[in-house]
Structures are given as C-alpha cells and as structure tokens.
Amino acid sequence: MDIDDTLIDYSVSIPQSLRGLFGADADPDVWLAWMDTLHPLYLDGTLSHEAYLRTRMAAMLTTLGHPVPNDAELDRLEQQRTTLAETGLQLYPDVLPCLGTLRSEGMLLALLSNTDGRFQRRRLQVLGLAVLFDVIALSGEIGVAKPDLAAFEHVNTALGLTTGDVVHVGDNPATDAQGALAAGNPMALLIDRTGHRAVPAGVTRIADLREVPDLLRGI
Image (cartoon, rainbow, N blue to C red; front, top):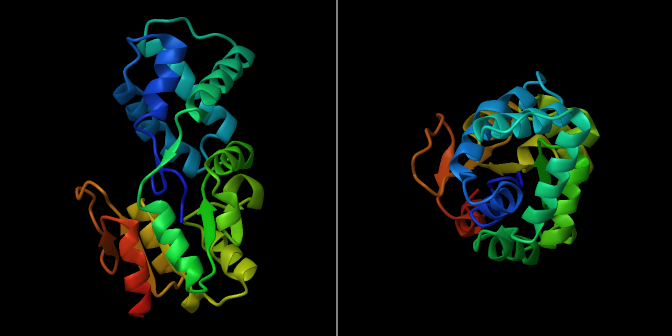
C-alpha cells in the first residue's frame, strides 16, 4: 500500500495548512494542481524530494503573487505548513477496518511508499499507523521507488514471501497497479474513491478498502 491518497484524507489538513500559512485566499485546488504537476518529476528522479518540496512551495508563492525567498526560507515555510497540516491529518474511514481485518486473519502487511522517509514516518506516527505494518519501505530510505521492480522485491524479501504471494493496493494506475503486475504480483488493486481513474488491463478497481479482505480470500 501507499500512504498518500490511498490511506490519508487530505480534505481537512491541506486547506487548514495553506490558509494558516497564507490566509483565506490560498486555494487548496491550486496547491493540488501543483502537486499533480510536480510530483511525477519527483517520482521519475528529475527532482529530489527536497527540490520537489521547494519547487512546490515556490510555485504556490508565485501563484499568490508573493516573492520567492531563498532555499532556507522555503524550507522554513514547508516545515511550518507541515506542522499546521499535522493537526488536521485524518484517515479515510475504510482504512482501519481493512487493516484490522487483514491482521486478524493473519496476513502480513507492508507499506511501500514513494516518499522521503523523515516526513512520512512522522505522518505514520501521528496517525498511529506505524504499529499496524510488518514492513515499512519508503523510497527515500531504501533507494528505489515504484514502479522499479527492485522496490517491490525489497518488500517481498522483507516480508519473507515470494512475488506470487503478495497483492499490491495503491491509488496510482502506473506506479502502483502496473508496477505491481510487472513485478509479478498475482493481483493489483487500484483504490479509486471517485470512480474516474482509468484502470489498466488486468487491474481490479475498488472504491473502498473494506473490499480488500473478501478479494484476498478469493485467490
């Protein structure tokens, strides 16, 4: 699973952090649009995680008509935004029931996320998720990212399982779904709460994580 979008509902934390930082005129949709534009550049290695955060903050400042400061000030603003966001972090309501059922049935759980380790581990602690996973693999720590085969192999090895015994659940059709199938996982589940994502061939779309236990019992 991936933590961002798959598990965390940012509908409260993002507006709260932006308005706390920039005021009522800070449009969360603009921030999300910059994320959609810039995050792929982080995933493909064009931007480091640090450069991604700085570029995203600089883009938002420019959009709001504010001057772009030096890197140290951009880092300070991002840290301030993160602190504001943490007070509004919340999970989607299907997350804990899904993870709880899977754990009660003896399934091993791994979190594979394309992100910097420091920020993501903080989110995991704030949300109480860290104790629910047997393996936490973050690209900033393991040195590889989805859809690289090595990222999926890292999880398999850490779990002590073979590729054919692992099912991947994620929200990104390319890096999650197609990446998992290319890695040899027997099933890839694409969480799509809006019903608007294109689903690659061979991938199963789900609207709610509570569908996962029944699907796994069927394989």
